[in-house]
Length: 81
Image (tube, rainbow, N blue to C red):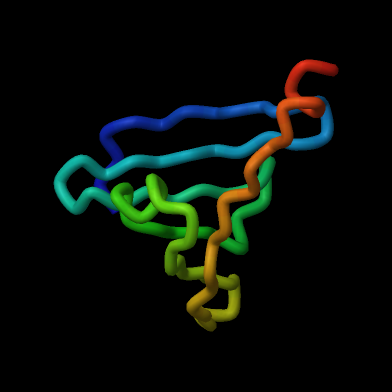
């Protein structure tokens, strides 16, 4: 994957992701923390949907298709943070 943008995103102390975006193919790939696998991959347009197909690539050259779901946060939960 040709990487044009690399960003590390930390949601809290226990959860950090390295995200790579490929502008040419319009694909995003991400890994949790320092792990090299699994690598999660999806089309950028898919990430704007409430439900989208994605690929999970494991270290042993095995890949599976999975579904990514957007979980909407209740207004009560978002105001308490």
